Length: 129
Image (cartoon, rainbow, N blue to C red; front, side, top):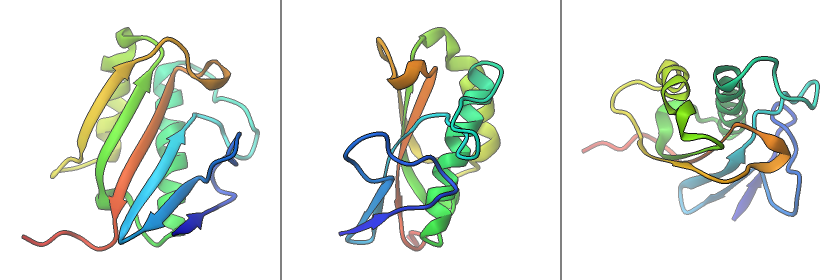
């Protein structure tokens, strides 16, 4: 296993890695919408927070020479399912077909009062079928 770490995404706020690379797969920990330069959430609401979470995830992937086209699965955690539509609008700006598989859930609370947290699984190289 290889731990991924970049200062272009917020540092882990607990005993975990930003990501782990193992057996050709990259597992990203859930990314909160923390701006790595300010340590704060972006101003605004769910759209701005979704964008920041995705930017953080992309930065970790880039530290391993990957980008969002290598993502095969995402999990989106929302503090309120009413934010699904606006989150989805921003999410669609970051991914293109073939879209990764995805699960989205409303949860009771997220760390630091975030509105969204996004985790990803990616793979090295593109799958050729």
